[in-house]
Length: 152
Image (cartoon, rainbow, N blue to C red; front, top):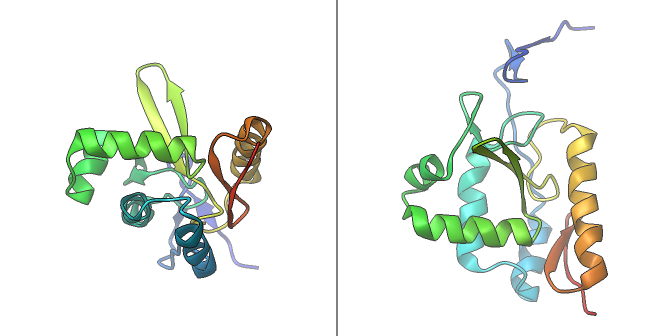
C-alpha cells in the first residue's frame, strides 16, 4: 500500500503529479438540448473547472478560495457580468456558495466536475439543494449528472 500525504491546510495530496477533473460528456448535450444552461454559463463552468480543488471541488487557486474578482480576471470577463452568471449558476445548483463572515467560497457541483474523490458531504449538500428546489418546481436543476427541469 502506498503512503499518501495530505496537506492539512489545502486538502491537496502532496507528492503526486496526477490531478484530474472528470466531467461526464453526455450531460453537456442534455443540458444544451433542455436549455438548462445558457452557452455562457456553460463556458463559465468549463473555465472554472481548471480551478476546481482536489477533493473539495472548491473554486480555488493555490489552495485559497477565489473571489469573484479573481475568477473574472482568470476567465477574462467583466466582474459584474460574471457575478450575474455565478448567481444564476448557484440558483441552478451548478455551483454551491458558502458564506463565512465577509468572504464567499464557491464549490462546483460534483455532477458536473469531480476533482478526484470528492468528500461525500459535498454530494449531500447539492442533493439537499436539489430537493429543496424540487418542491417549488421553479428552477431548472442539475440532478446527479443529468439535467432536468422540474415542472410544478
